[in-house]
Image (cartoon, rainbow, N blue to C red; front, side, top):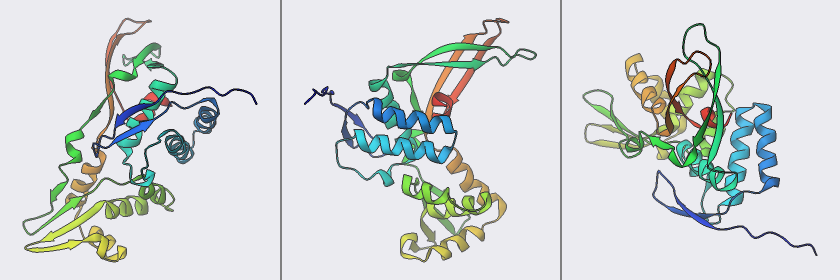
Length: 236
């Protein structure tokens, strides 16, 4: 029997929960599946392949469906840094007018941060003087089901409905998990435009990978300062 190569073990902390996970770097056969998904430019296929990679490499028992988007971004980035290397090369376009040059920049994955992480704990939103809600960050399982909705509007309304955890009306408390989902959707649809936008902004400004980069364009020497946010800015 041919020999197999032992892989080292490491620990990481899940941003949203503080839970410690033990993991190993991914290997070529796992990276191959990810690269095929990236080449397809299918966002759903990419997210599924990343989820499969995380499930393969994390040895601590956990529920992948409960991971938030920023948890998955962080875990994948840690796996990437230990598996392939701490640096990734990106071609960043110049922001100067009449310059379409792209400058190659090496990003140190060890320096990535998660912006708005404090929002992970501050999830209470006031709707009006009588009603407020507690929100939750959707897990991978919830996001996967919403990605299969037929229209963007339907997906947005259902995503917000899935994200509402508790509704408060005066001294009354309503746990959304105990109510029919169609009633939660009806609650969301009863919001006025400003209230709906407030909740939408909360979700839009969720914690995410971030990195501030400064560089001088190699063509026109314009000084650029750019904020990279979310996994797509770093890996696609």
